[in-house]
Amino acid sequence: MSWSLDNLGVPHAVVTNLEDFTEALRREEWFFVFSGYGLYNKIKPIMDNMALSGGGKPPLALMIEWGTEAHIFNARFVSLPVQSLSIANTLNGIADNQDFFDSSAARNAIRFTIPKAKLLIVDDIGTNLKVAEGLLAPYRAMIDTCLSGAEAIELVKRQDYDLVFMDHMMPEMDGIEATEAIRALEGERFENMPIIALTANAVSGMKEMFLERGFSDFLAKPIDVSKLDEMLDRWVPAEKQNKKTEVEKKLVLLVDDNPANLRFGISVLEEKYNVATAPSAEKMFNLLANNRPAVILLDVDMPQMNGYEADKILKSKSETKDIPVIFITELFDPETILKEIANEI
Image (cartoon, rainbow, N blue to C red; front, side, top):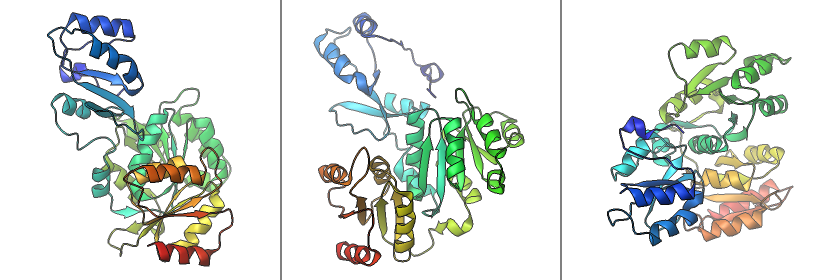
């Protein structure tokens, strides 16, 4: 966690099981209850059926992983990883407009898009990967993620990334060890590949230490969207940046699990459209949190969730049900696709 009620000066109790939770509810009157989203069905009946101290039921705030659908009446949602500002706003009944992955803040901060750039995010916590993807979504880059330094090394061997975001503290192989291993690989691209350290330990002297150990730069956690924008502008090649001052083209979202198809699709579409890509249905839904494409090109045959299954979910959501979807197969004809897009937009 990156927050503490101690730091906010709030009297509180921490419980780790339902028995202690029940006892704490009986013992004192509480101003607020913070709980993991997955515990809702267990703790809500306890709160509803118990005569609580003081007679009133405290409001409930559920800490929820980014990207999870949440529709629970009379519950406040706080996105993971939780920030102290989010907790303070919740306690004070203030709308948390500067949440960690707030989409409007991200859109206002970015000055360009990078649809031709390929990025890698490395972090041993899955929630952190989703948050980082959410922050990067408005830039429309091609994004890969992994959960360990060892996996990052293997991905870097196979893919030529424009930028790597490497978490510092990871088990087994930390970010410094992984970066040193990448720099030791044979080839100029491994020597010159930009690798940015992600760290919550942003004390004086840390930047110098990271630079000495092979990193190109460092970015403090929690990530500030304006700092992220500066970092991308500094390290992503200028020829892969589409500045916002350019005439804005309509956005097409291409979803395909085959990297070759994504590259081919970009080459076909980029002259007429802005192109965002996603290698899976899950990544597509992440991108849709911050982008509204004019049309979605959806691969029919993908692992985990195929195109037809993904389309059913799109049609079930009010915010995406009106976005036109064009199904594509492994080999699609450029001329036909361009005509179908033109007919839908």
